[in-house]
Image (cartoon, rainbow, N blue to C red; front, side, top):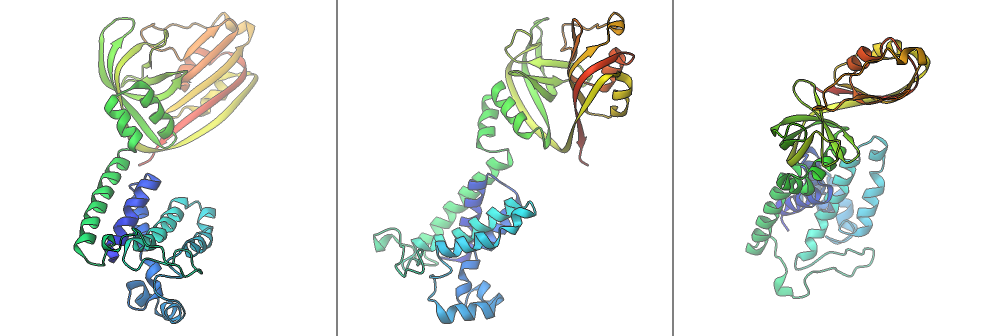
Length: 344
């Protein structure tokens, strides 16, 4: 099998198995697919690593020791340090690429000694007339199919994978929530929503930033920083007909906990006044401060701060909102603060 066919098989397989379209990862797999042919001095890797290939060629037949499950296992073990350096995607690209680099030769006329050190050859299919000859018209057809598979797989993965593509076509709210939960720690997520407002019954059509979830509903923010709960629950402000999400800028997500023990809310929140910061949690307000708390807000929007007796519940409230409502109060409780830093 030609080198280009090995490389294309490795790219297609890596893209499908890993669900990736990263050119560096796929390129690594393509390079690894050439390494099994290091057992002959006539190959490209054999010429590059001539002392090694000469040593292997003198001791083992072509497509035997390096074209086997044993060799693949040894490669996988040797590459384990990549896990330590948090490079698992390149680890799997190298392992899959090496494996596909020799497995493609299973379909050639001579096959490979896949179960080395046993010398029996693995050849598929059983009918010799259906096996590939290197550089033949049949191999060109196989190469064309592999190129098509690779292009389709990379295109799907660059859009977020098969499930995301399917969800995008349907425009389902549950699919949008799954994508948000999968991507929100790494990227900003926006939703194009078509539907109606549950209070005013006005038609809704626009783009919103997804900032969280509330039970089975999405929590989104419009361009004026107003929040809406999107879903089928009685508390939702938007009943969606179609929700299509887009993944945008990469982010760094920093999450921290803030504990208050009859402490000033202002003192605890003031250091957190950063863009794209959202505060959730529950506080018990000092009895003297409770009567002075005034919560006003339209039912047309989601209210991130709500009072239930002596309890104050926060759901994705901004530091500014918390300061405006509770800044002068003393409270006990714990808060979870999410700060989103958009990468340049």
